[in-house]
Image (cartoon, rainbow, N blue to C red; front, side, top):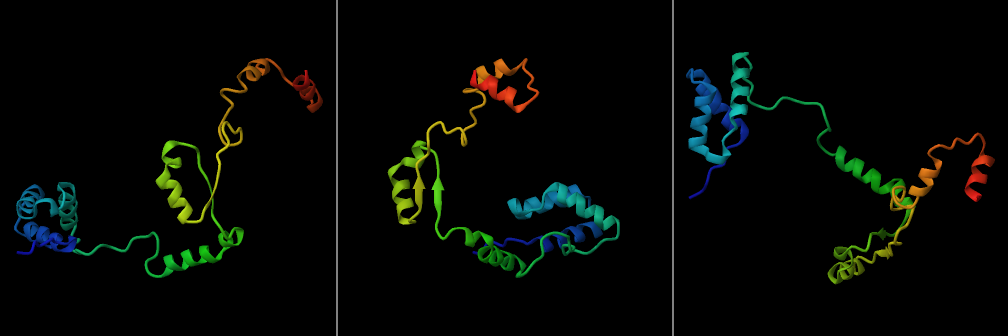
Length: 161
């Protein structure tokens, strides 16, 4: 026995049938749920379609919408990126990740070796990667709270002292 899974247009046609029979959107939703279970349209969707039918909009197909164009344009843009500036930068992958246990586990290491990726070691407490403003420079921030420098040389003198 095959299980019939209705598509949107089929269910919208059923809603139109119940609309013509003067049933309410809630009644139509209950009947759809009894017949199709999880494949039925939601109550909100049924109400939206009944509102369309009341406004003499009986088109069951989806209307054209703005957005990303359909067809080959997506593959064209992907090809353009492949052949664009990204491929000119490197001919290999360099991966930088931290030393968390999931990243340094043996299965992960062997998988990365099969990909022939160069894995750079993560420098511990690297100031350019980890934001250290809250820890390392707290005392400097307290010292600078009341200071105003009028020139670069004045700031340099304060740092050197």
